[in-house]
Image 1 (tube, rainbow, N blue to C red):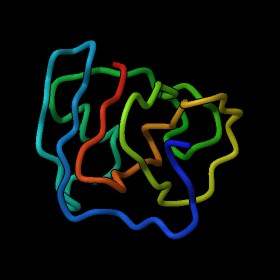
Image 2 (cartoon, rainbow, N blue to C red):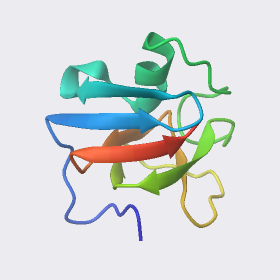
Image 3 (cartoon, one colour):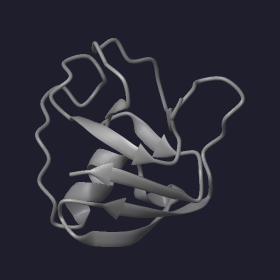
Image 4 (cartoon, one colour):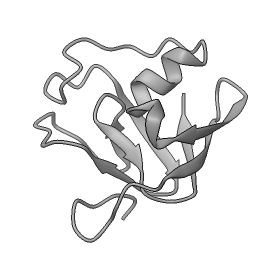
Length: 97
């Protein structure tokens, strides 16, 4: 399992690897969720509601773990995560985008 809402905490800093964009960047807790972070790095993932309900920002988490900053209701399969609500819970994560 790549993510869980229980017992995980947001890390203060993490290395975030965007595998298809060929970017590896340092995230800190002041950078917000992974959607905001990706956009600030010049990556343009799909998004819509920005609150974890529509599923437009769904991507595959290849490595690491995340935690959601609030409840999400989008239908997720396997290793899919919602960028709009996710923050790193491990020091390194790899996202397929």
